[in-house]
Amino acid sequence: MAAVEKRSLSDDIEASPAKVQKYDATSTLPSTKLKARANELGLSFTGLEFAKRMDDDDPLQHFRNKFIYPLNEDLPSFDPSLIRGDDECVYLCGNSLGLQPKEAKQCVNRELDKWGKIGLHGHFKGEMPWAFADECVDELSAKVVGAKREEVAIMNGLTVNLHLLLVSFYRPTAKRHKVLLESRAFPSDHYAIESQIRLHGYDPATSMVCLEPREGEHILRTEDILARIASEGDEIACVLFSGIQYYTGQVFDMPAITKAGHEKGCYVGFDLAHAVGNIELQLHDWDVDFACWCTYKYLNTGAGGIAGAFIHKKHAKNDFPKLSGWWGHKMDTRFNMDNKMDLANGAHGYRVSNPPPLLCATLEASLKVFNETSMSALREKSKLLTAYLEMLLDEHYPRPTPANPHSRPYAEVISPRDPDQRGCQLSIMFSVSLKNVYTELEKRGVVCDVRKPYVIRIAPAPLYNSFKDVHRFVQLLGDSLVAAHVNSTTEGV
Image 1 (cartoon, rainbow, N blue to C red):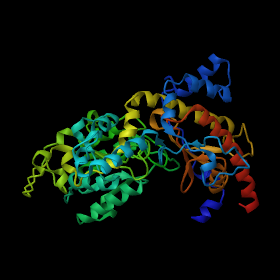
Image 2: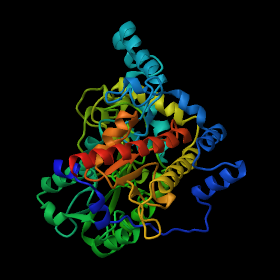
Image 3: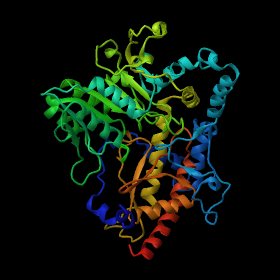
Image 4: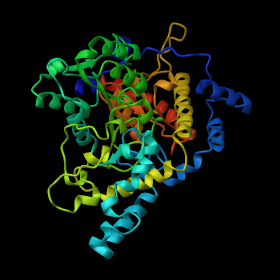
């Protein structure tokens, strides 16, 4: 892996160029809106003044003040010789860990104070009774994922929930034993599916159907996914995709995948780790069978935050196999203690342990912010922010072409160019060392992340990121690319 980090990535980009996906050019694209607004203001879209004006006009810009923004001087790799320490950093990593809502500490301290004052009685007293801590955030969670309240359970971690759901929705037979997933599924999904297949006595080599993008492409085409379901669906027990692909930022067509899977008799579920709080979701209306998600990315609950699960209402009374626990027992008979399971309907029947109130408290703090707006409004801003980032990258750091055969370092976006097929994340490859670019960005107060082998992920989250953040990042990227190029030359890359 070290060899990959030290070599230039230009050869890899040449060998596997990003393909621009086709979309309806007659529609009002975010980039078109941005250019029209720049012309209206008499400004260049590349200038800082335009970014400031966009922020001034942003109806959601006040939400930034509801989050704690790190300062450059508090970051471990910040270099004070390059940039001011008392400025806010450029935080573009909500795809990995969202910022802390200012109210999170208040919500957590409220529960700690209650514990100290009334001890055991906290289970049934206060703003968030501990016995119902998860249910206190059910309704707001359901709103974010487009579900009925009774279809949602807040519990455990993502992979634990995935296993609990697969116990019910992956029940292989000699004829129908396959699971369809993407070849680059996040390890959580891959490992869970692999182990579930083995648990049932099947071989992942023959029961895992892993879809690859076409040769030379980074993105899975929807028609290829649907074609595979159509051709092998009679042997597929379960289709399990991510809502958004973590590496490329691609939004999968969840309604189409669900419909195709159901037409072939498959159960269909989604890992929404990178989709929840990022794009509009309508799990109930899309007829999705099951889904799970974490909350520490775009839902901003902090590292290790509690996760969520969705089970469609139509399965509420199905006699599926499941791994039961005390907390799946109906509340009104739970304390009879007679060891006779009186299972709660729907998603609540999948709960196995009592909820952690401190984790529910941080989720409450974040969801309160989401509840002050709508996912459609956030999505509209997100498309503009991401398009602005894309436009500036294309303008300042383009890939060489016969018409523009420059030799300076360049950046290449491998995320879909269609705004409807991506979330707020752009995954970027570079013509110089990935490791060096990332190191230089960190020195300059940019918080982002590397996903090996080839990309840095940049995610302007609409709740707290601004157009100025995007503009600052692109400027700092230029300095970082120059420094990374010099370092690569020095290292003999």
